[in-house]
Amino acid sequence: MKVENLIIGAGISGITVAHKIATELNQKVLIIDSKNHIGGNCFDYYNKAGICVHQYGTHIFHTNDKQVWDFLSQFTKWYPYIHKVKALIDGQETPIPFNLTSIRQHFPPATADRLEKKLMEKFGYNVKVPILELRKTNDEDLTFLADFVYEKVFLHYTLKQWGMRPEDLDPSVTGRVPVYVSKDDRYFQDTYQAIPMQGYTKMFEKMLKHPNIKLKLNTKFQDIKNKITYDRLFVTSPIDQFFDYEFSKLPYRSLKFDFVTLDMPYFQSNSVINYPNNYDYTRIGEYKYFLNDQSKKTTISFEYPVPYKEGENEPYYPIIKEENQALYNKYLSKAKTLKNTYFLGRLGDYKYYDMDKAVKRALEVFQGIKDVA
Ligand code: UDP
Image 1 (cartoon, rainbow, N blue to C red):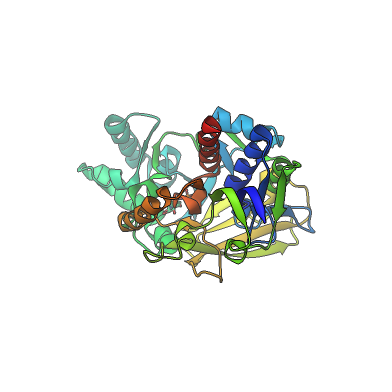
Image 2: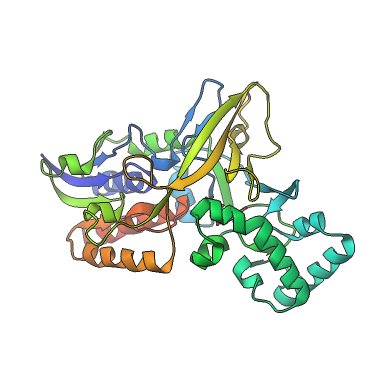
């Protein structure tokens, strides 16, 4: 069999490229996925209780990139959902990122006044300070605050999430959730924050609906590669697997979810509550909040980080640290020697992309092709 374009993986990256090639180059695309559904780890579905559940954990779309926003807006209307996260710290639901409101909640007024003043003097107002940066200050009060936040918010959550201490990961990982010198309680500050009105899967279905696009689910590249030829290949599956682990395996982190539907209107006060210091799970997600689904029941998920085991669970996250980056770079060098083969997505690029960054990257890969086509 011969196809013009073969795309491995029908997740957000592969689907974006498929749509662009089909519509703008008017070429045929075959997109395959080993799973039995599209959308990769962004897949969602309505359950019997009428709640849109994210099968691979809570996904909240947010971006500052108008090009990405406008691109996806062709395929969905958006429910304007602004994400907030609370963490249970010392028995109190506390705004995360830890901010000036969180400080007031946890310390007596005189202490909070002093910490607030010192933070504003040192960093300014409306400034995000990664916890590993805050720990470097030599002011006694700020060190006290840094130790508190490190211990209560980051250390035990990160040990559960990654099996590692915060300082053993690339600073960008914990830097995603800084300490925020602000009273802004939102998890993200991006201009555009929303959930597709009918869910992510419906949006992806629209992106794939084109006579030039053929989709094959339950299909592994390994199983078809000797039966198929192509002009271009797009790899959104793990780059190390593509090269048969020639330089050894790249580490990934996986998750296990326990979904429960309860006969009550709401379980918790917020869509996501983190448990840095209690229980073995990192967080509980409650899905009806995202699209304000009206149901007498509610569906929640307990999220347990687990090691990735090929064939047993899904790779969710690349593990961003220096030695893994070095190993990835070996694969990248090899990837660059291949003609008409493009790597993208969290697993193809071994990067901790958010959804908008994955789309951006896919649009850029496509543009590179279009410019020479
Ligand atoms: N993090 C933490 N405590 C929290 C929230 C986040 O220690 O309450 C750290 C943890 O290492 C986590 C990282 O910050 O993996 C990034 O968090 P984010 O919420 O961005 O992770 P994601 O939603 O992508 O799993």
